[in-house]
Amino acid sequence: MTVATLAEVLQPALRDGYAVAGFVTLGWEDMVAFVAAAEAEQAPVILQAGPGARAHTPLPVLGAMMRHLAERASVPVVLHLDHGYAVEDCRAAIDCGFTSVMFDGSSQPLAQNIAATRSVVELAHAAGVSCEGEIGVVGYAERKPSTGTDPSEAARFARETCVDAMAVSVGNVHLQRHSDAALDEARLAEIAALCPVPLVIHGGSGVPVAQRARLAAHSTICKFNIGTELRMVFGASLREAMARDPDQFDRLTLLKQTIPPMEAAARTIIRNLQGVGR
Image 1: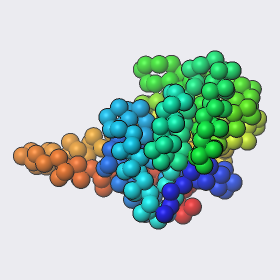
Image 2: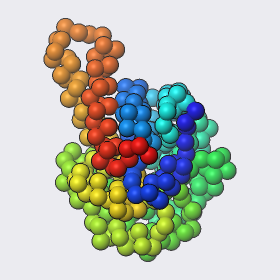
Image 3: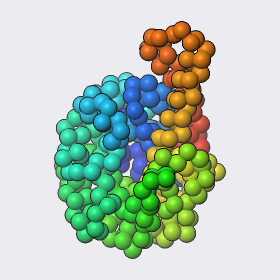
Image 4: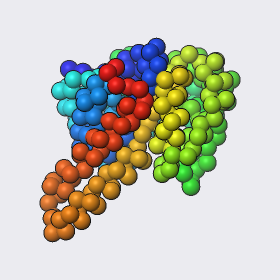
């Protein structure tokens, strides 16, 4: 059994200079591909259930699928709730067997975010589960704008919440389709100097690949969330499968053909984050 908490995979990454991939999962095929990729590279992996996945599939089902794979994997697998917007979201995930929860209070005033995040940390730690928080607002491409993380506020947030990992806003954007959202390394260095906690980059698909690799090895960023670029691989491979056999109507036959391309793409990301053999 290789079910792991977020702290169990991020603390070694912080110590040894690499980052762990937080792969956004939307269904069974994603999960199978990402665990297979992690096993092939002998790397830990974080399977993430975000709001989109939870709106489509009940949380207990997502948790059960993740745990089924994790218990049979040869590498550490974290079962992570991404973007829980209420304490009850996180409580429900813990009850469903998730080993890590992310409480997103970033849209709240600082004191309120700290208080709510701290309550989730206490709830999670009492259950032997990790907790990630967010300070600063990571926006969405062509939609909600970002608000950069203030280093002094980040220091207070990390100190008063005792989170196991802290998501920051330093130029990263959710749902970015092109890798041209370079991170503000000066702001990142200020945050890292004040905060000993492992840092997390949401919207990792938009970060230039070379910068991802460098920061994974030489900064306190220990987790990059990757979703959009893998969803693009899924979409392209599904279209190719349908084009190869226009008369095919069986969803299982079609969906199975998306797994190898997603596994290959996930393996490339793991190698880029210096996670091989960890």
